[in-house]
Length: 189
Length: 323
Image (cartoon, rainbow over all chains, first blue to last red; front, side, top):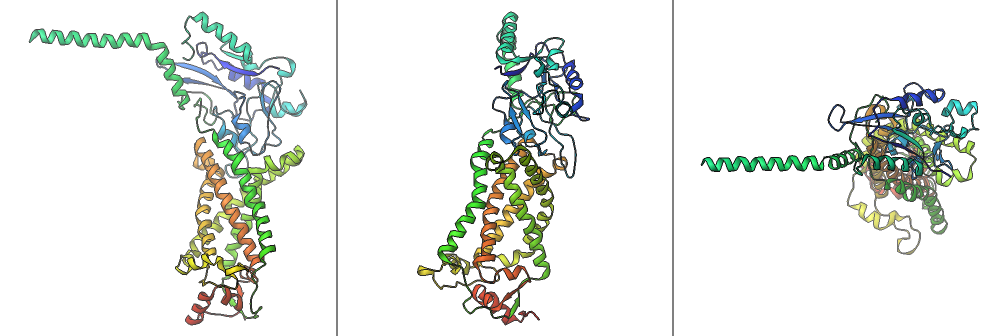
């Protein structure tokens, strides 16, 4: 099976936030107000060497969220996508502390600083519920993987900066780009 | 002089040109590497997202924290609870309990006020629930989850989190009141060393048999428990506040992970001591439990376990019996 990964080519990203909008729209049924699964971060904004990068869950092979979760609600699909079960999630926030990329987000809910169920990018692969069921749609959003399609953010990226798919295929595309740019140093920024 | 100035300016020019050329030649790689290094060091950028920590690309910290939790802290809290229970049951089977030599006198001596008894239970009942739910939160996924269905596990862990959150509040009040109000009776004294050497007179065989080392209002073991509870209670309350009220204290992600580890370590120590404390009060020391039920203790229990305290209150006239 494939090992699904995202890759953002910072030489191409123009900070249009199209991926953010595509994600929001595609997974709207599951997203509470204020939650966005993907964001574009611009470094050195307005300065020489400005670079933008689109980030969401990186679907780590050795995922820290999975390691730290007290409920053990994370699982990895056979495509290497890291998903979680919102019925088991207790909203403790440990995955947010552990994730290096700030992917897990929580709706504010309940008493104290209590959080609601964690939400993060699913690689448009839904959740543990039956594929395309109403429960899956309401909790996790779309399931494009089950339809044989790639995540909406990457599919709609206007500059093809954001790539999603099997790690081998994605890195081959990227390697070709870097080769045609004529410098093996032109990776970041 | 003029020549020297010209030579100097040329030299300076060359020097700057050299720098400039070096910069243009190195620019792509050094700028890229610098940016990547900054990103890994937690550089922050600009984003339209209002999500928590969303302007930072990478948060770096010591990833060994996960191994520490799964391989050390989780088994340790299981050992601190279940292991200590097994150890104590075996100890009592071998050693037997500490009986009152003269039996119960029936004369009850005032030891704790009603207020003292109530703050004890204000801390103690939440503490027990916090230990059980905290153990589920730290070690449950390794020790309970494999034997439960997903639905049952989800219900258990959700309930554990809820109880843990709510019980934290009365526990903190109990901890604070006990620590502040009882500290004056818990100051270490010289005779505490002797008490420790004789293990409090609780060993019923060998050279320890029948020994009753001196003890004041609190014996050395109780003092050790008190100060352990005071110190690790402080750590557990402080770290717990960061985890319970992230909206108020806004700790960084790395600080939250540190708080999580400190919280677990303190919990393990308090759990192990709690088991000892409960066994001592309920089973080991005959007549001990009465103190935290009515606030009174049997006169024979007082003379056997807290002789110096009993002598003192007898002398200064504060000794009062239950009417």
